Image (cartoon, rainbow, N blue to C red):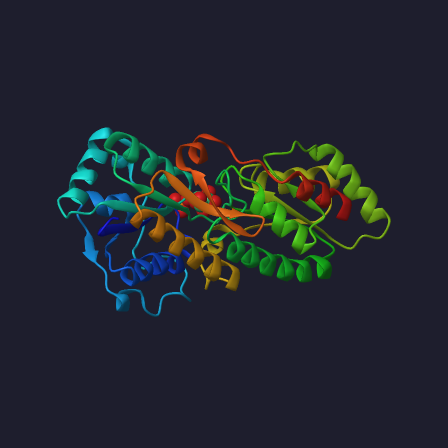
Length: 320
Ligand code: F6P
């Protein structure tokens, strides 16, 4: 039974991180365990920017996007010396376990810390990309997908008005999940993802035929890992001679008040992480599979690449 733990958010922020951190803090306090909040991810750990948390410190945050703890991308953490310094800052404060809320890069850093020092570590998948192996959900992916379909709905209006092709570039790093799920739910005609090859020449031929049959407009969603809206848009305009415009949604996808799904699931994951850590478990990531919380081996999670759900890929072809 651990008596003192710490929680941090790391890497790209995502809506719902606050709900997860709040649940870690409140669960620890409920169990009578001291809980530290580390500001600005691994950078803050190296700078000793960390404070003991009280319940009120996580009040009024569940509805907020971003992360009240702050986050960062930290090159120093990629070095063994950096990780040893971070470990020292934890044990100097008698902190016995660490919860890291972040994407695959942050979880990889946590895995190395655990291997090198033996300190108990529990990870939570905090990223809009939904690219953490072993879990079909990551904190923030639902809010980001809803942000994207809101943009798609607005783009459909203007594309229809002008009979245009509009190419929307979305985030996801090397994962096509955001593009696929928002493309399907937004009714996009084409969804380009890094996990599935596509033939722009053939797509352009299809587009010309569709317009000849009276199609008023076409929406293309491209995952950033599959190409840029500019490259795709320029190619389509040149090959089809159809009026084409592009939109790059960028960091708007990272913000916003988390949806109910992200708030509830993040809270469930935060509670499970705190309980697991307090009970002495280590090297696990909590995620979701088929709607239920699951625990995944941390090293497996960071050493395997998550695949896109083939059912969604097939559905996107059927629905167009
Ligand atoms: O990993 C989350 C993410 O938003 C990716 O989808 C995106 O490619 C990347 O972060 C952007 O990183 P940064 O916020 O450092 O520009």
